[in-house]
Length: 431
Ligand code: FRU
Image 1 (tube, rainbow, N blue to C red):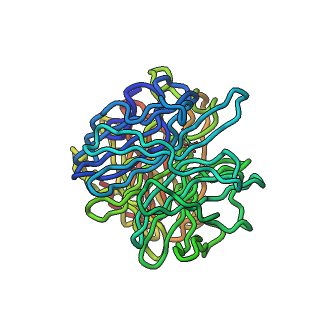
Image 2: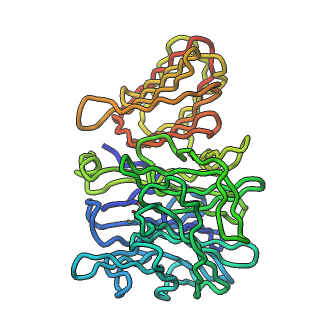
Image 3: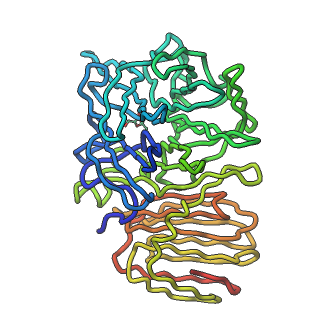
């Protein structure tokens, strides 16, 4: 098996959430939750990497390590902002007491060079409204002030998000719950984020529910006067329809683009530990960087345009009936377009199968399991399928449907020599 080539992936050890994202003096900085061992449990740190172009990532070692009393059991997830030529990180200090009880501190660290971070210590405190499941501060600037949201569990054991405000990034005042308690926020909202656009904003939470944990986006408007997020659409939308996507985080880069990375991983302990990567001493990746945009009022994601240079070989052909492609690699981009009114099937080495029927309007994605000869499946209704854009990277698949209105992200362990079979009932263009 081969590691992903263009995804952020640890050399060894375990990766989960993207953290502290920012562009600072031209360079992109990404941190991620990291453990030197390959199992998911332990005192998490922030591993740091840096890039000029969002493609080549330089590993910079540990950015934050649990070494102080307020973070002794882990530097948990959080975000980054730039103020006055300084790069600030906000994160959760996770502390376990002698009886196994949990304490949580929202902490800050600062750097003038983007390499060495000095810890400031706790800056925002838990209030009596919440249990100690309280973590993942996301900070941003708006209307001349700093705002922080923290994923929370209320004393009624329901998910919510706490809102704080500050004028100096060091003293934070709690303003109450961001969300209407009448809605179903599961039992905990992890990794909250707000993505703003002109007309509509989107609140993103990684909602923990008994029947599963998924990243959701809710359309609405952030009302800074009353400190509430007003939801327009109570049912929300999965930010990603695939099996392995969680804890996404966005940031606005120096060009003004909103970029997002997610954890390309998920799941129960056994599901994670069964993966072939574990035997090689590493586990999980981040997604490719995705540009967020709003189209027809919907939150959409497209691969950052920088990724275009990754295509080394180009093949372009028009397919009708069966066409076999032999890319001689399992690090591939496939783009099928002009699909309106047509049926299509794409089979990638028997590991990933995508089928769309123009009659039933059903899009089926099947991903082969790695430990048994079975498939996991997702079924979606897509009224008018226009295009399918797939990024494969040896053991990952990201499928962008209809210019990014729907995305499916998953682990898919491909063979080194993977062949692609495309079938369509009428002529389509594949490149
Ligand atoms: C989400 C999460 C966060 C937490 C981090 C710990 O995957 O559980 O809530 O900060 O992972 O690694």
